[in-house]
Every structure is written in C-alpha cells, then in structure tokens.
Amino acid sequence: MARIQLPSPRETVSIGKSTRGLDIELSRYGTGPVSSLLIGGVHGDEPEGYLFAERFIQDIREGAVQVPDHLTLYICPRLNPDGCSVDRRTNARNVDLNRNLPTRDWTADFTNPRYFPGLAAGSEVESEITVALMEAVQPRMIMSLHSYEHAMINYNGDCLDLAEAMARTNGLPPKSDIGYPTPGSLGTYAGWERNIPTITLEILRGQLPDDAYTQHRQAALDGLSFYRS
Ligand SMILES: [Zn+2]
Image (cartoon, rainbow, N blue to C red):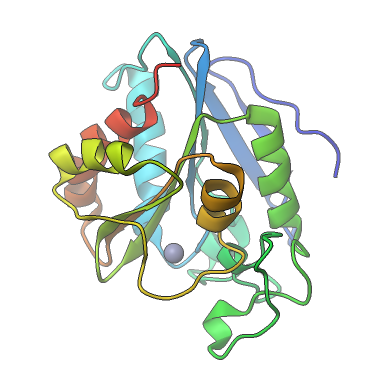
C-alpha cells in the first residue's frame, strides 16, 4: 500500500479506491497541532453514522461548527463506499471491515455471515487504507460512527474520561465492552493494541438523521477536541 497523501486544510482528496473502484474521501479542517480522526460508513447499512459525518463536514464548511485552534480534524465519512451505496454492512467481497483489521486476536472463525472477517487479517483494500490512514494522520484519538439498537459510547484504550466528556452532552452510557468479542475491530487495533483512544459511537439504530445530529453534534466536537496535546 502506497503512503497516503493527506489533504491540505479545507481540502478533500481521494485516499484510495474501494473494491469496486469508488473513491474513499478524506477531508481536513483546522491547522492545530493535535490531530483527530473521524470515520463513518465502515458498515454500509448504518446510515446514521455516515449521514452524521457528512452533515458535520457541511456545518464546518459553512461555519456553523468551529474547529478549535488546537485541532486538525480529518474526516473520512464513508470508509466503505461500496457497502454504503447498496445499504450493505460488508464491503463488496462480503467482508465485515470491522473484523478484518490485522489485530493480534484476528481470527478466521465466524458463525454469523454478517461478521465474515475475510480470509486473512487485513485482506481487504479498505483495511489497508484504514491502516495507512492511521499511519499518515498519527491521530491523538479516533472516533468511528456506527449504529446499534443499544446506543452507547463504546471506548477502547485508556479513555473513560473522554467517553464521559461526550456523555455529558449526548446522554449515552460509556461502555468499554460492547457485549461480545470483536477481533479485527478498529477499537481493538487502535485502542487496545496501539493505545490510541478510540470511540465507537453507537448512534441509536433507526434514529432520524436530524435527531441524531442534534443529539451528537456537541458530543462529537467535544470528543474530537478533548485532547489538547
Ligand atoms: Zn457498525
């Protein structure tokens, strides 16, 4: 995988192509010394996440959301554009991208085909791009937007304080454990194995986009700007 060329401030660039050849886009806002990474659309059937990310980008562009001076914010709203385009959880090769990252506990075992981890750790082009993106950005923290019938702030890594700061405005419970094992997930890869505070924000499944945006806008901003150095 070639090194990713990061965008300039207020620019959007393609950081690679999906399995089916769609662009995976990355936008950059702010010029501060601390970098945070916001990811949406890992699961293509969770529009609550990618719609939030896209509206957040729009609000930043229009000045309705201000990126704090200390922050450089990178946003990849649709990491899995193939899945998002057809409302499918997995990528175009039926792989669950949140089970395919090359974690130490990665396993080929699965029972539910929705969680197919692929034939090898990191086998998918979207996973290679995720790893290269983290290498390029060197984020202080990562926030990934998902949806689930049990809305929560799932935190991985030593960052309960970060999760609690978000909970103050969105009212969701911080949880370090989603209730089942997730080998190959971003939380494991970044949070547990690399000590990068990682928030998997599980927006309430089926919540209307306007309501989800209202509930989480401030919490997202507070979380992304939580670390000042
Ligand atoms: Zn998900």
